[in-house]
Length: 330
Image (cartoon, rainbow, N blue to C red):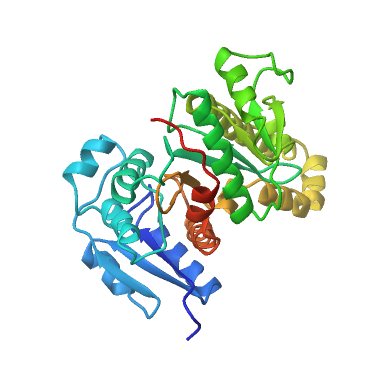
């Protein structure tokens, strides 16, 4: 048996289509990576039948539903699959945690269970945005609606660490999301953040919304409110565009014939722009690797999420963030 280099705790009950797609995704990840092991966390009757040499069941009698209040559920359901999975990382039994369950519950469980990296003021959720020039890390996308300028500096440092260790970008370029490129543009928060971020390696200045999908920079930094709106607009636009393309190529007999010819190219395009390939949103700043998948994740997305979590653990993401972080008062 190959040496195990990463163990990922996986929430078997996370997502709209759990546990079936989670189990399929885990099986695919294990088949693809012989140096990977998984702790499959969930009700014993669900996880135990899937025990193998590299997939160890970890019983958890409770499940946190998507519509439950995240913090209350984490405190009340201490034997839930999310809480137990995060504790496995804290206790050193796993190197990373992945769940497609409640984002809020994952954030609360990871923050309470793993704690924050020393010096980190607020953990941030990052999203990897596929683009023409390569993927862009956008953060924060929802954890912190209200921020201080020095928190944005920390987000930039954490985003750079993720870009280097997981996306293999040697020297990530960092941009501050704003309404113009000039350093005097935007809110007082943006102007203050711009001044503070000048000392960050790779900082190129302000970028605008159009630069996010264009891949102008490798890391885009903003507050959680703006980041979440940006992410949702991009997701919605992507769905509309592909829907319109499908409608356009099926309008007439000629267009349907042309669609057959360009189908391989469209499939490759969709593959390049598919966010499922990047495995979910990392919660950066907690003292352990935590990756949160979309609630509607299919088996491919689960596979990618587990693989990405393992890659982050092998790249020592937590240590990379800790080494580069600038302490900020909470």
